[in-house]
Image (cartoon, rainbow, N blue to C red; front, side):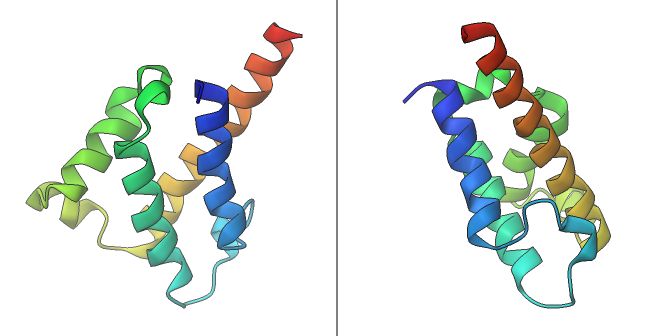
Length: 105
C-alpha cells in the first residue's frame, strides 16, 4: 500500500462514521469520540504515510494520547479540541491526496 492509498484509507474512516466534512456540526453523541480514537490509532499505525504527515501536529499528539501522556490526555479532554484536531487531519489528507494525484497525472 502506498501513501495515497493509506491516506484514502484514513479518510474512509471519516466516511464510515458519517463525519467527513461535518466535524463542527457534531451532535453530543459518541461518534466524535469513536472517530477520534480510530483516527489517532490510524495515524499511529500509518506506516508509509507517516513521513509525509506533519510530525508535531499529528504524529506526536497521536502517539502521546495513545501512550496516556497526561498533557496530551488533558489537551484532548474536550470535544471541541478533538473536533479541531480531526478537522485538521481531514483537511491535510484531502489536500495531500489531491496534490499527489495532480503530480502523478
